[in-house]
Image 1 (cartoon, each protein chain N blue to C red):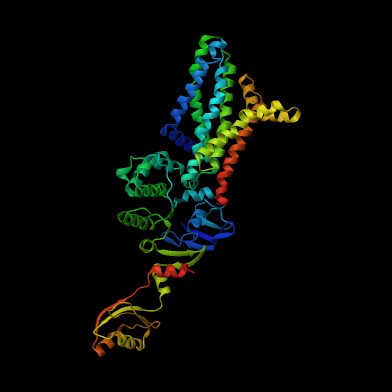
Image 2: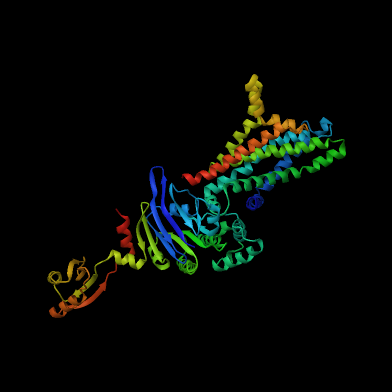
Length: 241
Length: 309
């Protein structure tokens, strides 16, 4: 775990050194702030003291931003060969994957932390449901973790950042919307399965303020699945070239 | 720390990159790994560092097996990979600190270790730059510094002097030689004088197999049983001198070198020297002997003999 932290902190630092972090944070705050407070069905139009608008916007903004921060993490190391040097240090593949995952999760947490003024403002404006807001943030973190692990996986299989970005978006799109759309076109078991696979179903039930073990298992298994797949991709280099 | 490589085989597809090789390196030995491109040098080194798994065989570093306890082995080894991959957007000191932390060095020992590495590798004037801003030679030094940051018992260097200028090459060789007194060093290279200058022992591999193993002296002796002389005789008819040299008892072969002057390459029979007989011949016939140089078989020739087939 200590070594995962060392890697996480190094990666977080390089996010900030390379301006990626600032661009991502400013763009995230800008987009979600604009749509939450100023445009469309914003908070004033809804006239309700909750952050539902923000959670709906963040669902989409994070979907685009996370592949952009994960795409470099393995693809760049694969391309330059630094991954080999890293793996000759006394770290396991799993520690490397964990480290990079944590770095992204920390960055997303910072981004979400910067939206706390939204929460405080709404709280001052009216009678906010603290529980639903908290679960909303938890939902965003869980959803982000899924996209991070998908992004890490697509980044680990290629040496090209653009390919990593696009495949992560494409894979994410299935969980984000395609399964949901398909679910509404099917009935019976197929429909139920597709609806269960859709991330939005689980995300919405969490943002409503209900943390169900069914949803937690869904998120945990997706995260683990892609993290293990990433670790296996890294371990595979030992066996062949 | 001793390294034992036992019956190592590694295939890529059906091609055997390393074919059942075994060798042993003792503490305080600098082993030079020689071989043409694609001979299996890098593959062997990657297996020792735990980057690749062998199809067969095992490597033991100290008492630890690479297959069973890779984490232990990795702590004992400092590795400089072939093309020295580094993070261009990291600062030199940050990168060394990162390497030190990954190696599990105690936090308060990190600073003195970095200072030591900067001194040893001559990085003082460039230490505040980003790695991407450094010239190739300085990057190579950063690569060496990260390999040695945890004071490893074993150093594995894949072509450590590529991209360095002649002064730096001399410096790095001196450094390797010095390190080799207490550590076990394995280095690979194409540059033959480098092996002679730095290594106690040479291992030549070709097509995944060991074709020669020994000190540079013993290898050279093994390659040449016979004396070879280059002789220049003036005031003599070329053809007659050739015939006369050829009729000497000790001489096996005379090879007149092209050109107008009387240059000959003379190979003696096994275990005899022709120097005296040639000199005596010249005295007897009144020729002037202006040059007689022993031609040493160079490591290059041996290398070519062993790897071109």
